[in-house]
Amino acid sequence: MKAKLIKTNHVINGKQIFAIELTNNQGTYVKIYNYGAIISDFVVVNAHGDKQDIVLGFDDFSGYINEDYLENYPYLGAVIGRYANRIKGGKFNIGDHTYQLSQAKGPDTLHGGDIGFDRKVWDILPTVDPSLTLQYVSPAGEEGFPGTLTVQLTFKLTEENELILDFRAETDEVTAVNLTHHSYFNLAPEGGNIRNHVHRMPASYYLQQDDNYVVTGVKIPVEGTMYDFLGPKAINKDWDRKTGYDQTFVLDKQYGELTLASETTEENGGLKLSIYTTEPVAHFYTAKFLSVKNGKKGRNYGSSDAFCVETQHHPNAVNIPEFPSTLLHPGEVYKQTTIYKVEHK
Ligand code: GLA
Image (cartoon, rainbow, N blue to C red; front, side, top):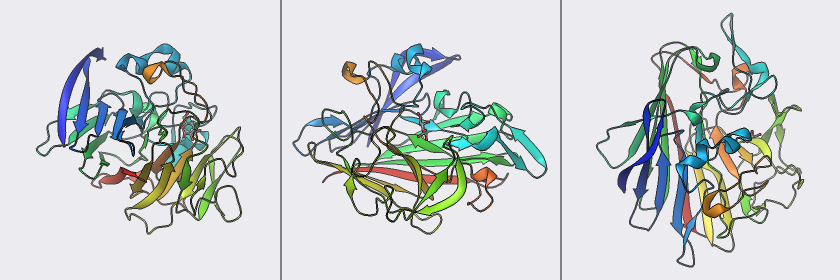
């Protein structure tokens, strides 16, 4: 893998924005910004020998800070933190202290609050081996979370066409952490609706949600429901076309094991995307709320024009003691590995 640093003409909060290009000898090219740790491009050679970009984003960095885009903001390709998905009532307790967070979605908190890690400028750390490490230090009290949290995200692109994301985080006070990456994938050469992509997820349960999409704590077997992706099936086979999927799936695994979260294939480009993770759940989102103008090549992105597999801990786990803990104590290291592997199907 080779890494190349390119200075953009953007400075945010006094910090220079860079694009970092990772390439391998298979013709794969990944572009990442040190703003939100955004993966803006993930170009692979498809089954016909053509270059194909499998993620949604913008041709130029200015797209990511455009007011129109931020208005109906979908977190295109960005890291999510401190806490992925929704937290009921935007609050949680540690001991007998209640922490009130910024409530970004009605009464609840979504994806870390008003301005999450997806809109922060990250530092680029020097690395010895060919990899990219971004660091963000989230001050105590940011969006209501206790403790100074130092987060590092290392990206590596292998010759096997795996983009490896290694997260680590440390805190100086007990806090809640649940990180993920919000790439929007589309494996069709011309993009468009992902309804015909064939998807599989080794998950025997999904998590019940309330009317505001907040996880309640109840696990429901997928068997006999539209959520059964145990065998490969077209995304639109059982879905409700208007809402698609915006659900959390509990992966069949031993806690902490690096296993397959999802496998998705598409006929025309002949590509297969496999996602592996150490995380216990994957939130599968078929982009119902997506509405972006002037994406790459001037394309508009609409509802169901992409899918996201957000590998993480159970949403709202900080309020549900039965779920694996999302609390991080001083002296402990939060770790997550997630791998996006692209092959010909
Ligand atoms: C997640 C959520 C969705 C939506 C998107 C961002 O996937 O579960 O409901 O908020 O992020 O638009």
